[in-house]
Length: 482
Ligand SMILES: Cc1ncc(COP(=O)(O)O)c(C=O)c1O
Image (cartoon, rainbow, N blue to C red; front, side):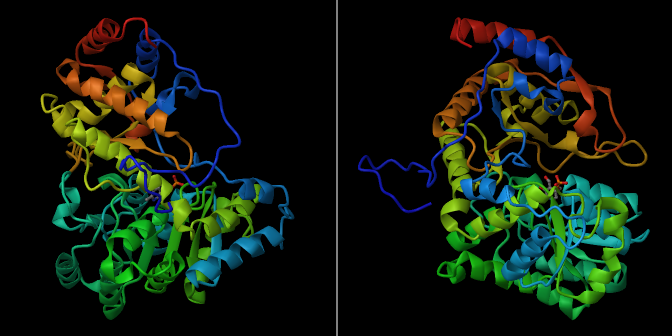
């Protein structure tokens, strides 16, 4: 966002866009909210959108499109083969990343499926700064093991470290020596590290990781799904690159990577995904799986209209005024919550505002999912839908043990260009109310627990009648207010 000062001295994230299409929202009364979250098994994924007021579940596929994206959607060339739309998207990716080869896929996890199938064998180790749920599931399914090597500050919720998504380079060196490079099919570097609060890596760190991998002949894979936030933070926080353009930073990073994949539900304000590479051999290794799992090589399961929007969205991603909106709104939200004493992940990252549920609800046992319970409580308190990112999002060990996640977060995503500042202030207000009433909030336990990615469809119930008590307190404090 442009540097625009207020006479009042206030720091206000000022949008460099205006809204031209709107969607009506409604807020159902608190008693109905309790009923709806109970019907949804206390899992915010299972709520119906019509019952949600402020949807902060995710930034995935729900970012607002620009007028130029919408206009581009009208001129897609949807011929099955040889589509002009594909050529344009492919050329845009090559222009930005310098790659040359592009394999389209229907979304991010489809790319992970292809990567895991082609490269991962039983017993392999895949180092990453931090795992993402779907990435890990695909690797584990192929018999591989994910090793997380984020710097120790990465999982410290409250910190001033500007790049908490950095790889721990000495730990990586040690792992390579112990494991042997031949047992590492690839290293994955995740931009805007999702599960630890949307935290970026520095360009310096990414270059060092790449250098080490190249010395050992290890393939480097960049998960660029949350790249736009990470690019903004590199420019803002990394002295050496503060005068570089976003485009130049992107290219420097891309040149250090062998494969770049992304969820276009996040990167590029659209829907879809794909894998980019500059090596023909890598392209040939993966190419055959696209028609098998995704669709023909010129669309890979994406709608042609979305591909048009993505080409424009990728160009918009190179505009600092555009990519700063998300991080600046998130910073506002985090700072306001901090002022009220609410424990949030700091420094504010990309993707969303992350509440440290372990500190918010220290009285709730980690096996009773504090972040999941807080997500249910926030829906009851304000119709705000967040997402649990903690132990519930982990998978049980093969022997049934439940690993306690290193962080227990309630993620409140701030989809790009979607919410107004007054809506953000409303969410802050309801979180603040909950914080004042945190003693009322109890735990939740599984009623039905799926084996894989249990957080998506699992259903849970409260461990006591704490939710009824919360509703009674809401009525007492807010009277007839919705
Ligand atoms: C960092 C990261 N990688 C991969 C994915 C998977 O992408 P998709 O949801 O499009 O399958 C996501 C989705 O949230 C993500 O945040």
